[in-house]
Structures are given as structure tokens and as C-alpha cells.
Length: 145
Ligand code: CA
Ligand code: CA
Image 1 (cartoon, protein in one colour):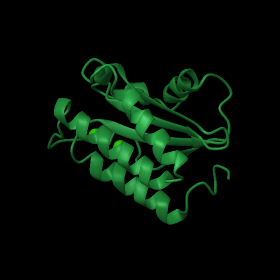
Image 2 (spheres, helix red, strand yellow):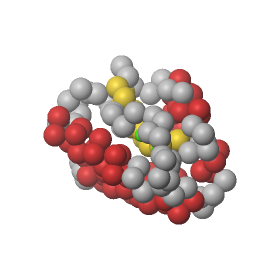
Image 3 (cartoon, rainbow, N blue to C red):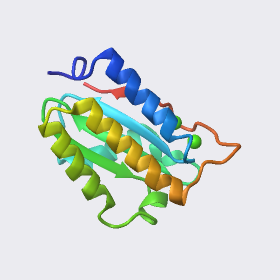
Image 4 (tube, rainbow, N blue to C red):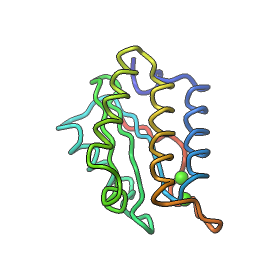
């Protein structure tokens, strides 16, 4: 299993669709990044990737990155400061716990989509969708090495 065959094309399309639908509920911006290996501590590295992808540049600091190192079986989720100021302190932990359970059951696409939907739902309470919403960050999956 590597970053290119971790998900089928149909599953990738489903994930992009889930991001699109999620972003119709909230002004927040959600992205997914897949790579094979995580070189350092997972959350710390996910934060670095978040920065490299320019995800801190959203207007209200509402970027969320789901990071997955496919071959290392590592996952992390990073929210920008606008979100972290609003969500419950254990919000990200709960999400990772659920996703870990899904991954252990080899429910990869399903687990990712559930995560994205849960995040969009929570974001919608604090940062509702606005009529003049701009898609500030692309909805496609980002691939690393
Ligand atoms: Ca938006
Ligand atoms: Ca977007």
C-alpha cells in the first residue's frame, strides 16, 4: 500500500465530493494530504505541512488539514487558530480516535469521509457558510512522497 494506491479513483472522487459538500455548510476550508512516510512526530509534521500548503492564510483562520502517512500508518489533524479557539479541547483527539478505529477496520475512504463530515458539521456552528463564500483552498487531495 502506498500513497498512489491507498485509495481507488472512485474513493478519491468521493472524498473530494465530501469536502465540497462540507464546505457548503461552513466558510472553513478543509484539505486532505496523503504521503508515504512521516519523517518526524506526526502532529508536528502535519503542522509543518499545513504551513507549506499555505493553509494558515485563510481569512478567518479556518483551515483544517487531515494528514495521513499511508505506509507509516500515522494520522493527524490540524486546525488553524480561529477554529482552535472555538472547538472543544478534546475535539481533535476524538476525531483521531474514531478515525484510528475505522482505519484498523480497513475502512479508509469511509473513515476519511466521516471525519471530513464531522469537521464540517462542527465548523458550521462557529463559521457558517456565507453567501459570498470564496473557496479559499482547493478541494482536491494533496499528495506528497
Ligand atoms: Ca470557503
Ligand atoms: Ca476548499
